[in-house]
Length: 403
Length: 222
Image (cartoon, rainbow over all chains, first blue to last red; front, side, top):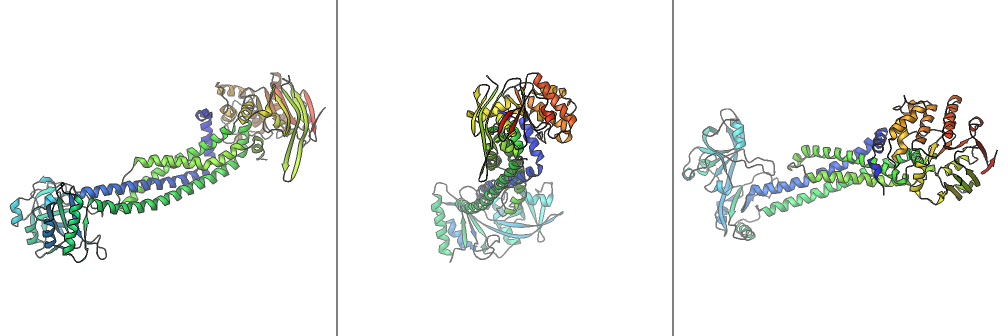
């Protein structure tokens, strides 16, 4: 098969001029392809994004960790904090074989203010092992000293975001924040932790030593939201997890808690992922199918309208292969433009729609390659039939079609 | 050996249930350098005969020998190459591609040619000869009928074929443009091109060296 014609300038320029001649048809076909492609780009980004999210959450959980939270019972319990774990739970979990560290998290949403500014933020009461178990690293200043856990000094460690909100670009170390008329001195800023899957930031928090928290924020607490465990990497992880569950079930009447491990995170997000893939997959396949259908129709009309042109080209020496190549080239150009436009459209979708789905934005290279591949394939596939038909006409039949 | 030899050419069309025999066994010889006019009323089959000579359609029956080789046996690629290299076409309604300029239209046959020559300067030269050097970048819609037909003639010559086939070349032209076009064809014939012309117009046919008449699918000498 001699394809050298594809590299002739005059061939290509005449293909482009033909596309310009039928501009409306061209635009129509380009739109058809680009919608299909946009949805493919979007779906790939959505899947990769939620994989990334799984990774992020697992990283947030930290290595060799188990997170026990209360909730998953009653309405809205996924988002709203519930307080169903108590001191007894904490003591039980601490004794589970393989658990090397254990800390509960006490927190309350309060008004926090500096001299310049006032914001709503969570204040956390940190027991002795808290900073270590919850993987807090210091960005500036120092962590709490052992004696600061025993007494109730008015000191605190804050997150980078809270520091920025309250003090702007100034160094917060040594400054004071005010919570319900009491002032606390900032001794440290902890390193950036990132966001929870819900989009809630972990960096706009203030951490107080537990005694201080009890004295000034919440004197009468018995129940809390969550307990985090650090485990010995030499003990089988699954064994520890099952023991943790058993121990908690002995103390709780029903399973009003959740044991969160990297595996449960992966499982949950997999279900989400599969649902998303199926839904978006169907949508994008339908879109591609429709765009192929539209293209195919446009091309059969195109071939019919230009039958006499095919005839004259045949009379001037074009073989049926040449005619086939001409129409396929038109299709490839249309679908290529459609693919590029669709990618851009998909990117805009990722930019503006992903945040609504709580999926981190990613712009995967694979999606561009897939987009270009699928668009060109759609173009070739849908144009092949009409183009073959045109190529197969006896020259004189095509010529006479104008008369 | 004749340049073109037709032996017992038949062509039958199917029109619904009906079989219509347009050519009923045509014998014709055309020598190199000939200028032949095929005359006849419309529907006499003269255009069909020209299209068969031009390899645009195949006869239902009979032998067509072009330069000693039998055309009816060739496949699509070879027929296309013959149309491209050995034959030039001029049609009644010009058949210029509307979205291409005069120069580009003239160069269309070279897209399908395997030869690599400086076709562009050849095209400019030929267009100058027929007085279109100022119209190179005009679209067909911006030309008069005569200019269109002169463009079409240059297009038929771009690959330097031996034979030029003209189907009612003056059918849509006024008398002044008609005589211009026929003088160009006559000059080409003098340069050694073989020309076969189909027309029903006496004045057009009078430029030819030799005339035949088609009637009811058969050919008669004048």
